[in-house]
Each structure stands twice: as C-alpha cells, then as structure tokens.
Image (cartoon, rainbow, N blue to C red; front, side, top):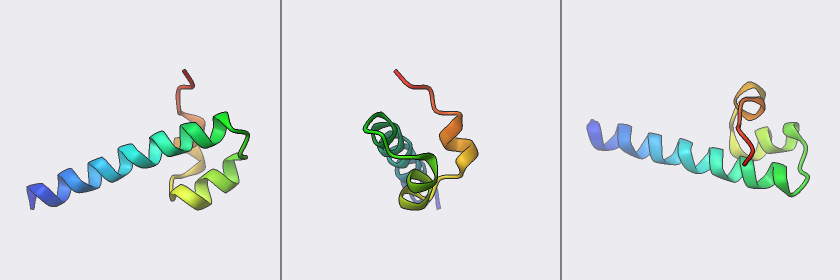
Amino acid sequence: MKSFEGLEKGEHKQALESARKMLMKGYNKADVSDITGLSIEEIENLKMV
C-alpha cells in the first residue's frame, strides 16, 4: 500500500512540474488542466519561478 501512495505522490509532483512548464510556454489553464488532470485551482496555486 505504501509504495502505491508513493507512486501517486510522484505522479502528482510530475503533473505539477509539467503544468508549470506548460504555463511558462503559454498554454492556457484550461488546456493545462485537461492535459495534466490537475484542477484549475491547483494550477492557479502554482508558484511560478
């Protein structure tokens, strides 16, 4: 069970990183949400570096 939770965390972290990169390349939030599976709220809360 723990390895599955770790896998989910890793996938979520990767989705957040992908979303950050997509936003920096000009993708709109709706497209980023559709592609990554993240919510619009999660995308809006990303800290852009």
